[in-house]
Length: 224
Image 1: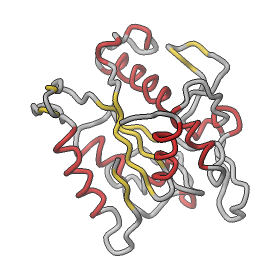
Image 2 (image 1 turned 30 degrees about the vertical axis):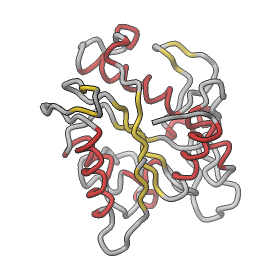
Image 3 (image 1 turned 90 degrees about the vertical axis):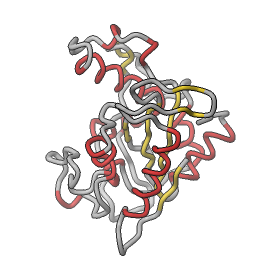
Image 4 (image 1 turned 45 degrees about the horizontal axis):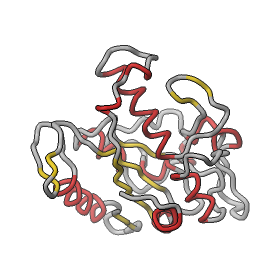
């Protein structure tokens, strides 16, 4: 897991450097071969990358003003973050589109244990799918609606009535992307074979997002 803090002098430069080092050693970038330990990687990435935001913020903290190609056209200017477009950098500069995902917790300034459940407990009903990204103590920040969190209750295109964990949502979003862009079968995620869906995750956490990820790893048995 790579953690980074905002650096007022060079924004994400140090973070991006660390990410490049990380990807160069444990993630196979398209058109390059690599070996992780004794396991050979596929010709495309075999990891899904999750960007985990910290307290009070949203997944938009990783999109900046779209400097590297992230679509921020529907985000009001006063809800954009001045920290650079890390998500766009990974997707467009490093060629990892379809493998990078970021969501928003239902209680952005809530309990770390709840965030850990939303991150990786597949049996937990993630309320971000119904109540959005709420705030309890921060009187300055704006709450965001459920559609803006990126979390829903769909699996293979069918509603389950239970909000997905981040890990599950990333799998579902990958299937949706793969069906449309590789199989050219838009709207048919059920056609994506299990063999092409990555089963491992890289967590890149900002600020308190690192603690949320660690609680998932330690108390819920998560591993990456």
